[in-house]
Amino acid sequence: MMISILAIIFLGVASGLAVGSGFVAFLTVLGVIPRLTQLSKTMKMIQQYEWAVVLGALTGVGASLREPVLHMPSFTLIFLGITGGVFYGMLAAALTEVLNVFPILVKRIRLDGEIAILIMAIVLGKIFGSIFQWVYFVHH
Image (cartoon, rainbow, N blue to C red; front, top):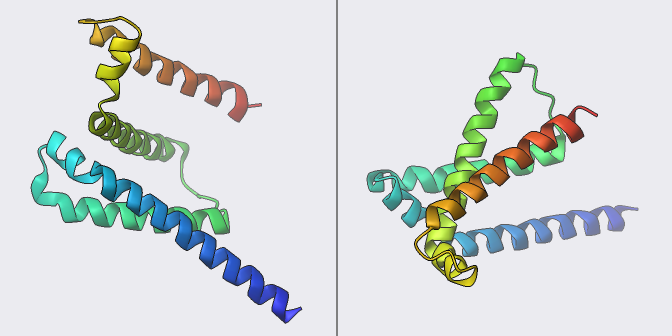
């Protein structure tokens, strides 16, 4: 019994280290955080961004292990949702900027000079997809 518990602990720690290392390598190799600070004109705060990513990852791991129940008023969750959405939106924007996704996609679908249409389609698709998920899957 003790050996199986130790094996599970070892596998859990090893898996967490592998995923965490991959996440850090992903952010480091692509230069997402420096590009994000460059786009938002907050280069002086790069260490705060890095610590925010580390603390956010640790908080996310802790929350996924414990499944916490937040005893807060409903309107506070709006603030948490907005801040989470802004973070992921900016991270995704920095990633697409680093990988030059939009210019390649514009050429592939033959929308030369109409990149605003592509961006609005992506934004509206994300908005309607999120609303559909919250209305249909969360409330049913």
